[in-house]
Image (cartoon, rainbow, N blue to C red; front, top):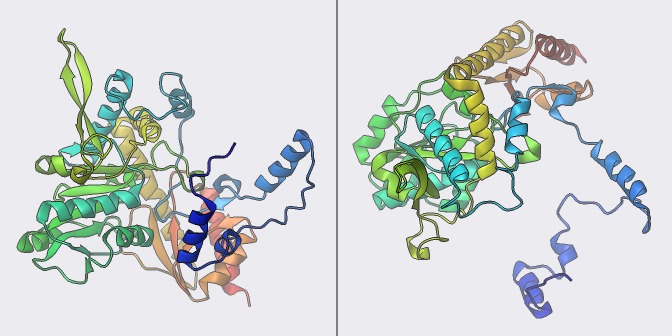
Amino acid sequence: MRYLPLTQTDRTQMLKDIGVSSADEFFKGLPVTKDFDLPDHQGELEVERFMVGLAEQNRSASSGKFFLGAGVYRHHIPASVDYIIQRSEFLTSYTPYQPEIAQGTLQVIFEYQTMIARLTGQDVANASMYDGATACAEAALMAMRLTGREKIVVGNQLHPQYREVLESYVGDHIADGLDDTVAAMIIQSPDFFGTPHRYEDYRKQCDAVGAKLIVVITEIVSLGLLEPPREADIVCGEAQSIGIPMSYGGPYLGFFACKQEYLRQMPGRLCGETVDADGRRSFVLTLSTREQHIRREKATSNICTNQGLCALAFTVHAALLGEQGFKDLARLNHEKACQLADALSTIKGITIENQTFFNEFVVKFDKPAKDVVMALAHQDMIPGLRLDDHRLLICATEMTTDADIQALCDGLRDALTAN
C-alpha cells in the first residue's frame, strides 16, 4: 500500500499555489514520454528485453572517443576498488549514519579525512559532502558565519552549475566587488576553462578587507601536480575523479577542508583518533555539528550523510595509487592534454585559448561549434562541451589514447573544411 502523507485537499492547494491545475500539467515541461508502445501485459522476459533495448540507446563514455570534462572526469578505476568496497564489511543496505562504535567505518573516514587534508594543504577535513557544488555553497555559508557578513564574491570563472547552487543557497548576496561587507571570495583552480591560478594575490585582496578565501577544485587529480592551496581558509570541491565512475551524474563525493581555527563552524562531521580504555588505537566521532545530533538552530549544516561508500571508494583508490602514484597520474593527465593541444594547434581554423592548463582547455573554431559537434557526433565522438557559438571545452585524461587524439584531429579537419 502506498503511503500518501497529503490529503487530496492538501495536494489541490499545493498545485493552486504553484499555479497549475493538475499533476499532469505540473510535469508537462519535463522531457518524459509515455509513448513506449508497451502492451499492458507482458511476461518478465519480454519486459526485460524491452527495457534492455531502451538502455542500449544510451551512449556511454567508453563506446566511442570521449573528450568531455567540465567538472566530471573519466579516469581509470582499478577493479580492486569495486571488489573491496563490495565486501560485506563495508557494503550494507543502510548508510551508517551513526558510526560511533563502528571502528571500521570510522577508520576509513579518518583516513579519507587525512588524505584530503594533505592534498589540500589544510589542517582538517570533514567526513565528506554530497558533491562539489553543495560543498562550495556550504563553504560560503561557513564564511558568513565566521565573519558575520552576508556577501560573497566570485573571483574568477567558477563552474556555472556550482554558481547556480551557490545562488540558491545565498540568494541575492553575491556581490560584484570586494569590500568590508564581503564574507569571502571564491576562486576555482583550475577554473572552469581549465586555467590554474596562484593564490597569493587573492589572499592579499581578502586580507585587505577581512574576507575569507575559498578555493574550489573540481578536478582533484590536479592536486598531484599543482601546489595545494595552503593560502586558502577553506578548500572544497569534487573528488569524483578518484574511485568513482561518472554514473550518469552521481552519486559523487564532495570534499571540504579548512584551517584548524575554523573547525567548529565546519559543516557535516569529523572523525578523530584516540585510544580506548586498554590503550589501543581507536577512532571516534569527534565533531558532529549537524541537526541530527544537536539543536537545529545551532547546526552548521543540514547535510545528513557522509557519502560513506563514495568516500571509501576514494580512499581505496588513493591508497592503491600512493603518493607517488597520485603524482604520476596527474603528470600523465597533463601530458595527454599537452599532446592533444599540440595536435589541435596544427589544424587550420582552430585556436587554443589557454596559455596554461591542467587536463582541459578551450578551443575556438572558425566555424559554428554546434555544427562541428554534430559532425563529430555522427562519427561516434563526443569532442567536448560547447561553451558558445565558436568555443569548445576539451578534456584529456589518462584514458585518452594516441588513436583517440588522431581520430579527433581527423574529424575536426573534415568538419572545419566541409562546406
